Image 1 (cartoon, helix red, strand yellow):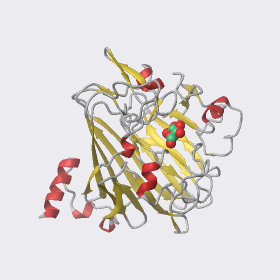
Image 2: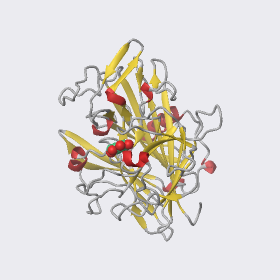
Image 3: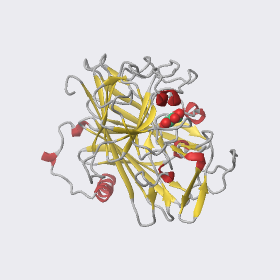
Image 4: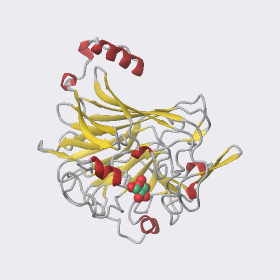
Length: 400
Ligand code: BGC
């Protein structure tokens, strides 16, 4: 009976008919989901859901909707966790680097924490002086989400929900300079579903609505190190970005509004380059970011704003691990872990230092609410905010 009602929920959720058994992916019968306790935050229990297939597993926390571990094999079958993490919930609650979490309401920066919608100007926490970053002092990354396991005949997953109330983003208990007064408008129910299939695709589906016009930009902030968390820097790992242009920033990392060609600059990742190759040059953008901390404008076919297309591929030549991102979003923030500071430990027990992991955050462009020429991040009552990113894990024995 329980299985039946779960099956019905899945049908409603995905809107697809149940496929006959013959249409299952090979390996789908080995998909599993397990739940364990990951401690408490205040009086609230935090759970960890582990999704697994024949090759790999992904652990997700209800706190922050955090990707806490991604265990994948290298080209010889040696499994390592490639997502920077912590072993204990107390570290996550004290941490300021958004490690593994869903960031919102607005992933990335909003200049001076201010934006205008209609006749009203809204003000936000200044938590990254002089700007607002990743939803302010208390973004989605520090909320405990409600979770339900979900299954289809091709995937296993966890559905996380959080109700973001009007006024979030201006934290009453943490005054900032200048002070904020409004926070984000609108009450916004958010759903994030992480699901894993038998082909090593980790899919992230985001859905949200609002009761007042607002802005929304959700992303996942995992830091990757394909050689294994705690194994050293990512400077020898190689990246390819499907982008002819990027959005240059000022010294506070707010876009100037221009879309500049990458051609002839260290921002050109149209073919594979190691992260370390050009990172320490005197190119002004890299000086501003203390390394890479920029948004690339993803190439798309003209008029196509919705289909999933390849955004980025990261490879580790030493282990052979490959991670490919597909998204329907217009941009990707590549952050080379410039502020990881040697004080924060992962489960490997090793201190993370600058460059020990990198984030690839599929998203709308930073500070879009203040740049009318950027794709809009406004969501209105009656709209459904809906976006998907798929992360495929493989090794260079199988592709590249
Ligand atoms: C930003 C960085 C910031 C980091 C915080 C990234 O998304 O682009 O500037 O330092 O998040 O962890």
